[in-house]
Image (cartoon, rainbow, N blue to C red):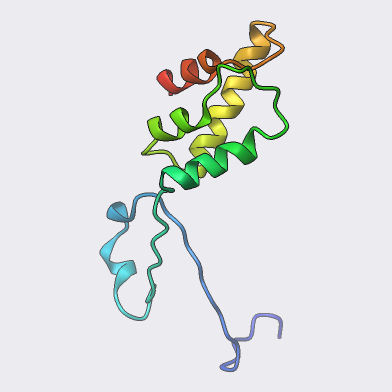
Length: 112
């Protein structure tokens, strides 16, 4: 009785991908995934806002210009920006830096 299929059940399937171009076209036919919702990468102002949130509890050096970083990361998602800040924190800890500098962040930017 536990594996019955009832017709009155509403089942929604959600899927996410960063590479829609690699999805088998059979999955995109009608009746399968009928709706595609594209979430675009954040624009410069959105990236700046994301960086401000990610860095609000981080002691930043006066050399840090989050606007410059936001402008230089046009192809970054929110997750990419989080990785950039996290890696900058690890880089600063590795070098016993108490205050994060622009060079900590750009070191990671160059090495991603």
